[in-house]
Amino acid sequence: MNAVEQDAGELVGGLRRRDPALIDYLIEQYRYRLFRYLLMLTGHRHEAEDLFQETWIRVLEKGHQYKARWKFETWLFSIARHLAIDYRRRRQPESLDALLQPVDTGRPLEVEDTDATSAFEQAFQGEEAERVAAALAHLPASYREVLTLRFHEDLELEEIARVVDSPLSTVKSRLYRGLVMLREWLKDIYV
Amino acid sequence: MREESHERALQLVDKMQVEGLTAAEREELEAHLEICVHCGKRARETELALRAFRAAAPHFDSSLVLRTQMQVRLRAHEIIENAARLRALWISCALSWVLGVVSAPLMWRGFEWVGHRLALSRVVWVTGFALAWVAPAGVAAAIIAWRQAERAIGSRQ
Image (cartoon, rainbow over all chains, first blue to last red; front, side, top):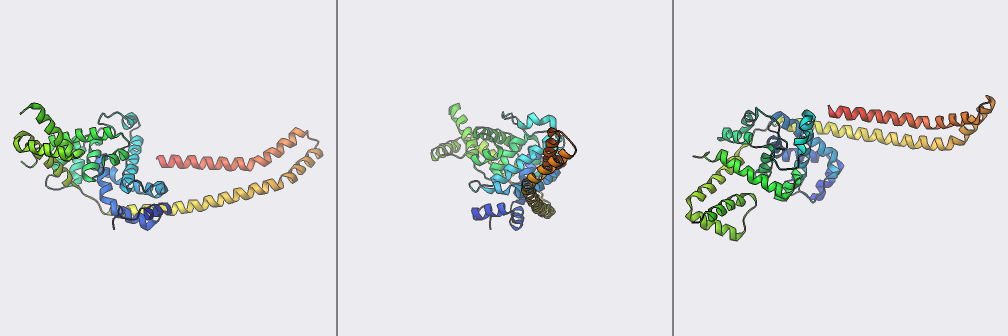
């Protein structure tokens, strides 16, 4: 049984009741997708793990706010994103402006990360992991984020706009720029 | 072939992945890619880059699920306990308010009597009555505010 296919009313009711069995099931169901999203967003394995736990606690606390008109994952990623921003804000208060800047500079959420390549290398498995890890480490977090929502999660553009709390035009522009950068880094990967 | 047609084809290559194409756009792109090696190469590079991106699978530590489920259950238990505590607090507040209202006339007479006995001015014993009536609520509000501030600081750390 997939949570998306699950009766929306049942999901809303369960979240409102803080049904522990339902939340256990959701954690199992979305574990990999949420973790991948958080890893793409933060570029740090431990940070992604901390945020993974915090996100589910927030789901428990704020479950009554979930509305069935949005896919559960859209709401889930949106919660995770807000927590990631708060987490960075607590760690680096001086980068508050960068976190909140609405202008699409391609670098909101971005922090100095000299060890990003190795963080992704450790996290990713597969034949081309090193190349992909290097490409991801060079992409700004805001581009990685929309790329993963579009090409891993297959979310619609409107849903992505809702998760990242930005206009549709910004989402498109990040996707196009991100795609160009990704292609540049990976263009000879299968040569 | 004109330069603009290549530019248009390259735009459509990206658009196909990001937004999707209409039937007419798809036809136009396919026709162009059949005769243009350069744009065809770009389309393949785009597909391969996205295939590599999609195939990249982060390693997931499965113990994280158990740890998270445990934490969520602990928090759920905490929320239930807090709710019960809050309910008890509201009930005691309501009872204390009712008791305060019911006992106010008696307290007034008591303060009045003490005021006369001690030959205090009316302002003094009326102020004493007001303080005695307001003090418990003030102390309770101060304790709640202090505990909330403490919890807010704790959650920020």
